[in-house]
Length: 296
Image 1: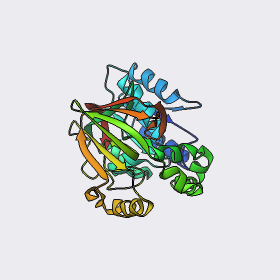
Image 2 (image 1 turned 90 degrees about the vertical axis):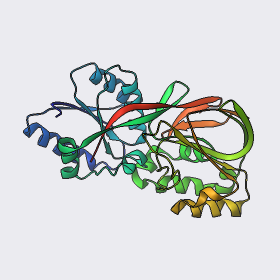
Image 3 (image 1 turned 120 degrees about the vertical axis):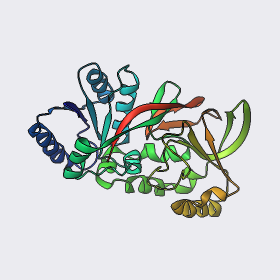
């Protein structure tokens, strides 16, 4: 099905062993008569620029190799183009929530077979101000913890890097509430919150059921807000989130949305797919059926 394949690879994402797997997949596809090129990123926005160039050529399939940040850049490149090229995801980063949601394997035979026999699915994408995200936008204390985890520690330790960073100053970071105004459907609510998430899938930060009513093809995003609570209640929510039973907590606000405007007092940091976006105010909305992805 795919004759011209461009692989966009972040060589510093995840454990370095994966690069051998990518070259193996390239050789297998070339043995099938496919034209396969690998483009290695060196700096921020390289993945986006490579994607735009691929879309403007005769490329039939783009493969994103890296973590959520690399995938985010590729998605922003795809949305900048008129021609909609299908996307395959080879996850190598810290979280890889979107790839996990679709059960995408990094084993060479599995990934090769996905390209050869897999199915395309059209998925929604989120938009925060002028930037797109494929999985999640987040604001509040949870983003500060993620931003403090160095790229070196994330490469070596994976998800544990986030936990270790947060543990250094856990009470001060997590229990620092922010007052926000949330405007949805013409109505404004003011809340004192610890953090908020706007997600496209159920998987966020390694939690498989955190946004357990979310779907990637329903034309909506899912909003979760954790309001100001005592420490003991927060840990109760944390434990419940493991199996998805946290939504019945009175300090958890959950809603399907198409658009939301967030204003923080003071301004609140926002990130998208784990990458720093900026500070509030921010307008977040869904772009229905925006990207074609390849799944097993």
